[in-house]
Amino acid sequence: MSQLRWDPLKYHWVIIATDRARRPRDYMVEAEKGEITSCPFCYGNEDKTPGEIFAIRPHGPANSPNWRVRVIPNKYPALRIEGELNSRGYGLYDVMNGIGAHEVIVETPDHDRGLADLTPAEITDVLIAYRTRFIDLRRDARFRYMVLFKNHGSRAGATLSHAHSQLIAVPLTPPVAATEMKICRDYYAGKERCIVCDLIHFELASGDRVVKEFDNFVILTPYASCFPFELRLYPKQHSHDFVLLDDNGLAELAVALKDMLRRLKAVLNDPPYNFIIHTAPPMQQRLGKPDYWGSLEYDYHWHIELVPRLTQIAGFEWGTGFYINPTSPEDAAAFLRDAEI
Ligand SMILES: [Zn+2]
Ligand SMILES: [Zn+2]
Ligand SMILES: [Zn+2]
Image (cartoon, rainbow, N blue to C red; front, side):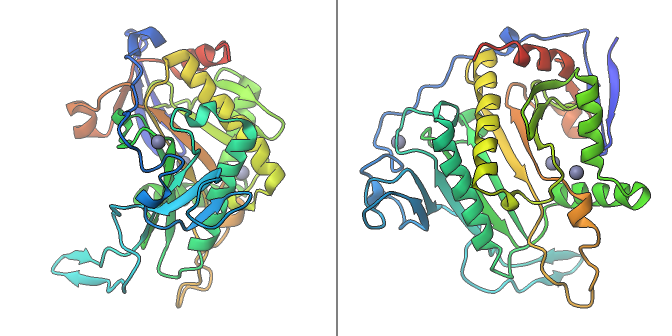
């Protein structure tokens, strides 16, 4: 029988439709072929992008070859860096200028290798670029939140097939992040415990949804997954902020992230996916609100959320906010655990 499951971290109900029980092969689509036309992210094409913001390169000047990871402004940014916010009311509405930063992290100079194919040392470089850009953008008081995400495959929104991720700094806290932070704060207020730490303890004890456990990280399928093969990567030790990881921590995270991506690739034939890093916002002082951030350091637990794009959102989901997931997270975890990588 199907089950309705409640997610205490997201405050939503999901229908796990086990009657339909779809297996990995039911989702298989042909792997996408990358475009072969000239690619601005490729090695040697550095002059085809806006000037770089940050790069990891052993030697040589900016915007020259020899880089390992390169961060550039998005050529078609959703938000612009220059100007004032000018937040104002407009009748019942609220409006502000489209101020923000929109950066692209090119993960490798090699066109034909995805993030899953890079070595742990190369993925560590990508994570160092993430951390560096988070820290730098947090210095700009106009930005209230940084969204670091990856679109892999055109069906997940990637317009270029060359491996890259994006970082958008926005002038307000996105509702998804605000809701998550409120849930964590409310739970802590009642129990003086982090809800994610409690969840990790329970999941490790249960084991049904554990894909892989490392010394300091764990990969899980969420109990109330909205989508088939949805994944979470958590640090096992409590920490509210991704940027607090030192280089050793990033190297360990790179191993876990690669493991997660390799399993996904093996089980679902390199599916399109999105991942996002959910971490604490820049904790700026808010005028007249001295205790604005309250217990955030203790109640919020950073993590990575990954959703493979295997199904379409249809009328029922769109109209109700209820999702129907045709593969139980327990089955998904078993398939991913058994993957040969
Ligand atoms: Zn390329
Ligand atoms: Zn925690
Ligand atoms: Zn989250």
